[in-house]
Image (cartoon, rainbow, N blue to C red):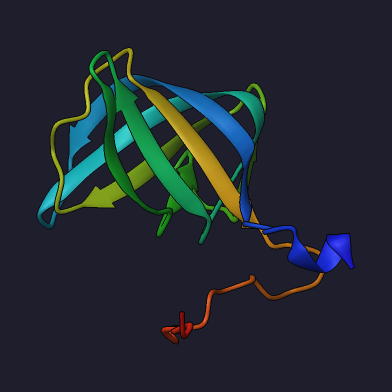
Length: 122
């Protein structure tokens, strides 16, 4: 019974980290950041955040990964990759990039309180 009462929330799992080593103007509104993968992998379609000296500055998903003008789905540790970010242009050399996913609870459903008001007679 106790296991059913424990709130199991999704946990964030960082799958890869990178360092911004170059920035380029994109054809559309946005920027292309050149990164060197320092840990794990960066994967197309996964959640991404850019962390500046002041903290997290951008969150989105990886829409495009390129290694030497070739589109790829995954970039591994030690590789240099270009990531297109649309609608945000403030990345700087030295910023950090994290790729992450949300690990869902084992039971697949979160506990949620019911929105009923209980009244007791005194």
